[in-house]
Amino acid sequence: MRHTESPRGAGAGRSRVVGCALLAITLGAGVTGCTSDGDPLSAEPYDATDRISFGGSVEAGGTADPDKPLEVVAEDPAGRVTDVTAVDASGRHLAGELAADGSRWHSTSPLAADTRYTVRVSTEDEDGAPGRRVLTLTTGKPTTSKRLAVTFGPPAGTYGVGQPLTAELDAPVADRARRAVVERALKVESTPAVTGTWHWVDDKKLHYRPKDYWPAHATISVRSALEGVAIGDRLRGGTAEPLTIRTGDRVTAVTDAAAHRLTVHRNGEVIKEIPVTTGKPGFETRNGVKVVLARERLVRMRSTTVGIAEGSAESYDMDVHFATRVTWSGEYLHAAPWSVGSQGSANVSHGCVGMNTTNAEWFFGTVRAGDVVEVVNSAGDTMEPFGNGYGDWNLDWTEWRAGSALTSGTAADPGESARLRPAAV
Image (cartoon, rainbow, N blue to C red; front, side, top):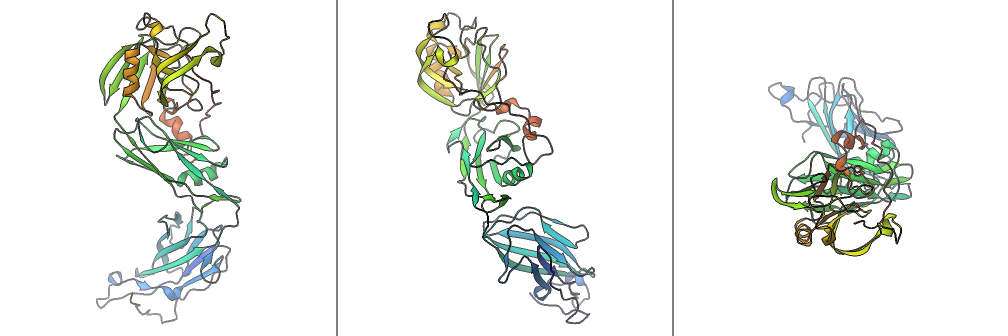
């Protein structure tokens, strides 16, 4: 860049070292950048190299303390800062806030440790002439001993449109401000784009879902920008493997317990209606939206696993075929040849949705993990949001957003996790 001479003299407006507890980049007032036509706004930005100084937390060689904010100060009241960008070697932008009068800029998100930053500062003097400075600095190694690892789920693959993303932390994060640091760094991108957010299930687990179901045939990627970032006392972000999943067709199934009928839709069109039986009094099938967890061609189902005493009138022990699991506690849609006479007319199961073997095999081959299965008009309770599978969609959007640390709402109480137990027929 060329340097435009100041009308106030070569020494005018030089910055002084700031002795503060922060990293300070101090700017001089700038110089008037007049061109031959006398218009300062048409001048090239002057080089402010000799008007930048570091103080406080910056050591010799440009190493900065990662546990302190980055600050840029315009020393002369006649000049002002107009823009600051700070980007690390991984392309992560450091969030910051610029004072309305341009006198000061400071970072509002933690700096990553042991990382090189490129800082671009734009200034303006009282005549409107622009100044610019580009510099690099390196943050020191962290003094903290714990790194927070993040594991994303589900495993890479193709899922139904109801599949939430999950993030498992290897240490608890309870404080809301610290949760916000973590959540802000967990980046989700979807093609086509959707509106979605994370929800804290507990101190170590987050789920991400859109406002509505994912689009069919979408590509969804999640990654962490948390590495090296300060989260709390003696805790910084660690590494995380990024994840990409895809969605297939939009497959949704609705079981009407009162009508004893299962209706399956693909991409908005009904493709099959199946007579079924659901839970009888005392064993009612849960209402609400569930997400397919797995398909199991053969499952041994025993009544003792759901609290029914062996030898009682309700006891059973049998092999069940073409079982599609929707809760960890043992709710399935499966073949039930013993109840064919009641399918389509009465509810006689112990909580599962039963159908004849041909229909169960068809359903088993049609759905995949992540597809949506909803139950309506049952006398049972509503599927719990968490702990017994993916009941995420049973929270409306306002409740879901309240579970984010980046909103002003209060996190919804996820309640107690359901006790895990094997299947009921």
